[in-house]
Length: 107
Image (cartoon, rainbow, N blue to C red; front, top):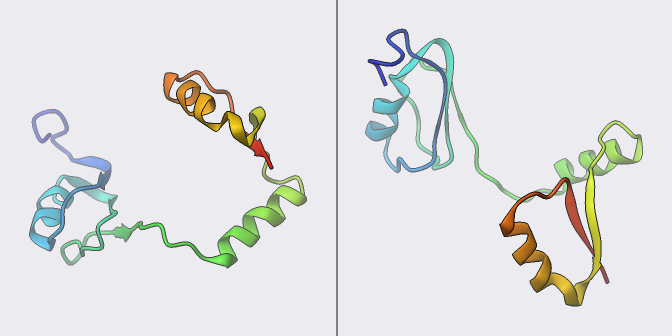
Protein backbone atom coordinates (compact mmCIF):
# COMPACT_ATOMS: atom_id res chain seq x y z
CA UNK A 1 0.00 0.00 0.00
CA UNK A 2 2.80 2.43 0.82
CA UNK A 3 4.24 1.97 -2.68
CA UNK A 4 0.89 2.92 -4.24
CA UNK A 5 -0.06 5.59 -1.69
CA UNK A 6 3.12 6.95 -0.10
CA UNK A 7 1.19 9.66 1.79
CA UNK A 8 -1.31 7.13 3.14
CA UNK A 9 -4.95 6.40 2.37
CA UNK A 10 -7.89 8.57 3.44
CA UNK A 11 -9.85 5.74 5.00
CA UNK A 12 -9.45 2.12 6.01
CA UNK A 13 -12.16 -0.41 6.82
CA UNK A 14 -10.71 -3.41 8.64
CA UNK A 15 -13.10 -6.37 8.73
CA UNK A 16 -10.67 -8.99 10.05
CA UNK A 17 -8.25 -7.79 12.75
CA UNK A 18 -9.16 -9.21 16.15
CA UNK A 19 -6.37 -7.61 18.18
CA UNK A 20 -5.08 -4.07 18.62
CA UNK A 21 -1.63 -4.81 17.16
CA UNK A 22 -3.04 -6.07 13.85
CA UNK A 23 -5.48 -3.17 13.58
CA UNK A 24 -2.69 -0.71 14.46
CA UNK A 25 -0.56 -2.06 11.61
CA UNK A 26 -3.33 -1.38 9.12
CA UNK A 27 -4.33 1.94 10.75
CA UNK A 28 -0.75 3.13 10.23
CA UNK A 29 -1.53 3.18 6.49
CA UNK A 30 -4.05 5.99 7.01
CA UNK A 31 -2.87 9.54 6.27
CA UNK A 32 -3.10 12.41 8.76
CA UNK A 33 -6.71 13.51 8.91
CA UNK A 34 -7.96 10.12 7.69
CA UNK A 35 -9.91 7.56 9.65
CA UNK A 36 -9.60 3.85 10.36
CA UNK A 37 -12.77 1.83 10.92
CA UNK A 38 -13.00 -1.57 12.54
CA UNK A 39 -15.89 -4.00 12.72
CA UNK A 40 -14.18 -6.16 15.34
CA UNK A 41 -14.18 -3.92 18.42
CA UNK A 42 -10.43 -3.30 18.69
CA UNK A 43 -8.80 0.05 19.41
CA UNK A 44 -6.53 1.93 17.03
CA UNK A 45 -3.21 3.32 18.24
CA UNK A 46 -3.25 6.61 20.17
CA UNK A 47 -3.47 9.70 17.99
CA UNK A 48 -5.29 7.94 15.15
CA UNK A 49 -8.92 8.81 14.33
CA UNK A 50 -10.92 5.60 14.35
CA UNK A 51 -14.43 4.24 14.73
CA UNK A 52 -15.84 0.92 15.86
CA UNK A 53 -18.65 0.03 13.48
CA UNK A 54 -20.58 -2.99 14.65
CA UNK A 55 -24.23 -3.64 14.02
CA UNK A 56 -26.21 -3.82 17.21
CA UNK A 57 -29.98 -3.73 16.79
CA UNK A 58 -31.55 -0.84 18.65
CA UNK A 59 -35.02 0.68 18.47
CA UNK A 60 -33.98 4.37 18.39
CA UNK A 61 -32.06 4.31 15.07
CA UNK A 62 -34.80 2.25 13.42
CA UNK A 63 -37.45 4.68 14.67
CA UNK A 64 -35.45 7.61 13.27
CA UNK A 65 -35.13 5.89 9.89
CA UNK A 66 -38.86 5.14 9.84
CA UNK A 67 -39.62 8.78 10.72
CA UNK A 68 -37.34 10.00 7.93
CA UNK A 69 -39.19 7.76 5.47
CA UNK A 70 -42.56 9.04 6.74
CA UNK A 71 -41.39 12.66 6.34
CA UNK A 72 -40.20 11.93 2.81
CA UNK A 73 -36.57 12.73 3.70
CA UNK A 74 -35.40 9.18 3.02
CA UNK A 75 -36.58 7.34 -0.06
CA UNK A 76 -36.09 3.59 -0.23
CA UNK A 77 -36.25 2.40 -3.84
CA UNK A 78 -38.25 -0.79 -4.35
CA UNK A 79 -37.26 -3.31 -6.99
CA UNK A 80 -40.11 -5.76 -6.52
CA UNK A 81 -42.95 -6.76 -4.24
CA UNK A 82 -43.61 -10.50 -3.90
CA UNK A 83 -45.63 -12.91 -1.80
CA UNK A 84 -43.56 -14.58 0.93
CA UNK A 85 -43.71 -17.98 -0.76
CA UNK A 86 -41.57 -16.58 -3.58
CA UNK A 87 -38.67 -15.79 -1.24
CA UNK A 88 -36.45 -18.64 -2.59
CA UNK A 89 -36.80 -17.35 -6.18
CA UNK A 90 -36.15 -13.78 -5.03
CA UNK A 91 -32.96 -14.88 -3.28
CA UNK A 92 -31.69 -16.52 -6.47
CA UNK A 93 -32.54 -13.41 -8.45
CA UNK A 94 -30.90 -11.15 -5.84
CA UNK A 95 -27.67 -13.13 -5.93
CA UNK A 96 -27.61 -12.86 -9.72
CA UNK A 97 -27.39 -9.07 -9.37
CA UNK A 98 -29.04 -6.25 -11.22
CA UNK A 99 -31.57 -5.22 -8.56
CA UNK A 100 -32.50 -1.54 -8.62
CA UNK A 101 -33.91 -1.43 -5.11
CA UNK A 102 -35.16 -3.48 -2.18
CA UNK A 103 -37.34 -6.57 -2.40
CA UNK A 104 -40.47 -6.42 -0.23
CA UNK A 105 -42.33 -9.55 0.80
CA UNK A 106 -46.06 -9.23 1.34
CA UNK A 107 -47.34 -11.33 4.24
